[in-house]
Length: 471
Image (cartoon, rainbow, N blue to C red; front, side, top):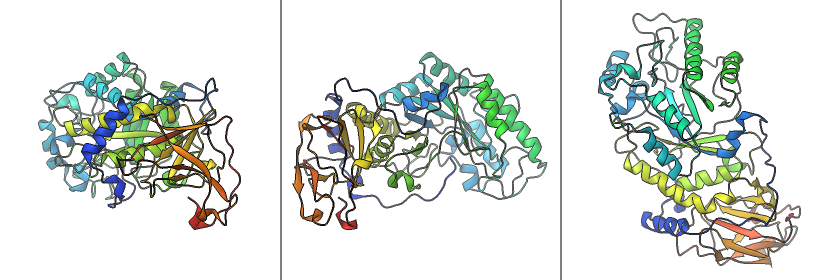
């Protein structure tokens, strides 16, 4: 994975939730009913642009599994094992004969994808180490030359095709193994060419294009191409043009040789994920269950369930896609800890899914940025993406009462009023819709959604409150 900054070490109080309490909440949620929308209301037209072709699957599936897996799994430290530890090729190559994933079962992976509520898979075919997880004809530095000897990408692709699961391919432009790659000590490169190398960008790009052609012709339908580590900032739209010609359903990210189809905010480093009320262009945020790494790491520091729920929640509610990563072990299995995280997220997602999929972002109805709103017809969903400061949620300048409000997953009624509040004394209007008496002290609030059913599509009055009065 190409890192774009440093993740914040600080977590909010709400991210340090008791795990047993969270599991109990998930169990309650999993047994409850789905969100109710407005009866007979037509599906809204999302504000993010559509492609108008076979790539529109991207706007339907929305939530996918990222898989970082390669010989670095045998090192059990990080997917950038060679780069971060500054290892020469000969030293790093010692991992290759250790890679023998005899327990690799793509069907088990896809079972987990479905249990998590995900709709597609993005697989790392080649990371910055240059090792290829398919039977490429262009190098011997590949999975079929390990003790395992099988084409792991072909096995996964066949399973995806059988189950009609869209498959996307990750490919790093930086390559620490290829003799023609012009390494110069930049990120994700060797410090300098090694003995026997012949740096030649044109020849290396011919290699890239030939491998892309292999990936787009030998593995059936491919639904996406996820470039990474374009350290050279090379521009060449013809490469993506080739992908689109060979695989018309493939969406392409913005880390390759042109702007592609969608943006890729990573982890928690892009402020737009928090500041925008809606993504006005296609976005797929990416995150890993592991705080330290994307590939398999022993003694990983895993994100809390609450942190991942809020991260996923706010991106989906604003109209974006979300790609959540696991790093399989060298034997091909996904670690119990990682699988359990994804299943718990799936338990949270099931009863609130109707508030996040096939809805329209509606964050502009309120100035409160501790919540995100979505809408289907005359039903507005209030998503708590931060730990509430009080037992009330304030939705100023929205000042019309719903017919009814309920907490999704438990169907508990939520009290509300349109109140004249002291903090609104200098605001316009000076009254606002308030959801009140929420049971915030009784159980974890991560991922809560309140469904508000109105008699008509609500419209908020224009407001210009003072900074301290925006809640």
